Length: 403
Image (cartoon, rainbow, N blue to C red):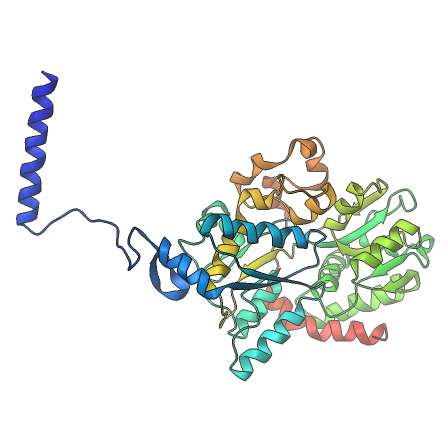
């Protein structure tokens, strides 16, 4: 009986296929390129490419330049991505990973190349969201999403995307105060940095960049000021200079210098990014703590491709790799827990939650928020409004401290 039904169905399928063929209706098959096989759509090139064509393009491009920050594990990151390309595509590439604590320099270089009609000096910029917003206003950002070369985009919550031009690789990065809880247990707010007990024991960020910008966003919130209004932000600057200024040992954004000052006891509170607290804790400095402002304004890192990037295929492959759970949580990398805590910056979506390593599972939520907290408690910054006013009051800040 089963044999008769199978035979009957086979005859019916053949008949239907003949009818469809006669009517010109045939089942769709995947499109193919010159290399044969199914294709992947690469929007930035406006092409459908086979795996063979993608490999050929990687060989042709041969190199990648990414602008980012000075991670402790930068050398390992370069090694890991270079090996990934070799393992996945069988191609050796040159990978230049530039690190700076003042990423505005990347935009300066990008705009100079743009003005001169030259290719972008970078293939990917992995820097704070405000810089992407500024570059958008200067028509310096290319569109690349969605892309079949970036399937990991689907793992990331929509709140961390500005399609088609950029996607976050961090969800919990913000400028904050890192301090010695043994020496300064009284610190509960940014305004407490004015406490006379901290005389000569504080560092604040240099003016001009988002590290200072993020600090003043938080301070403005505590003082009830509007960060979108340059005049009100100048009042915040005045308050900081008059009240916190007498306690400032140095204005700096050099993370290694701040580490040295904290470890030696020369400083008890430094203005930097929240990741520094984790880095110091895992390096054995267990008195290091993070001062959370009353409102958290994240300045997360976003991945984007500048217009005129010379290596757009490798750029997308890097972006996809950087978003993968195994890179967001680099548990298998041969790095210490401190450098790990710099690279891993919170959950981008539900798919990442299960990747917290066993060695950190007990304490993870002491240093990182839950996915629900990320979605409900972090403030949203109007970066266009911030960019419209920040230069005026940051220049004022520089003038007030003699920079």
